[in-house]
Amino acid sequence: MDAREWIEREFLKLRDEQYLITSDSADEYNCIAWAANDTERWWWPHPDAYWPTGIPRVETLENFIRVFQSLGYEPCEDGALEDGYSKVAIYLNAQGIPTHMARQLLSGKWTSKLGEAWDIEHQTVQGVEGKTYGQVGQYLKRAIKLSSELP
Image 1 (cartoon, rainbow, N blue to C red):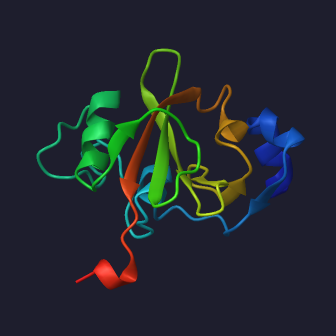
Image 2 (image 1 turned 60 degrees about the horizontal axis):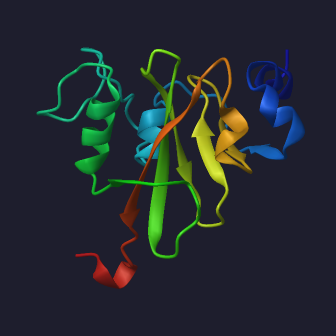
């Protein structure tokens, strides 16, 4: 089975929207790391994965929010593109447990790392909602630092 067949089998909504596969399959990092712009580590509250110090290693929405607050994000209302802000979305299963994260691009499109598989660019945040990842449960945003503001 090729990449597109697998993706469209797992993410039915992507059959109806344009998406791009933007990387080869890789297992060094996952969707949480990808949302945090880290392609070197696998982020998850599991003991064998990276997880920021001081945040409980428990799969709860609150802990995932805390992780991204440590990166400068704060909860926000929606995934609409806002000038000057970067956004991420946390997906939850039916039990309210985090399953996935996506990051908004400057274009307003979204990017996701699909488990141990590919990175994709999708038109809408809803593109990867469904049986695999559930629904978006929380949006977070942080101000984009201009290169002139960086140390």
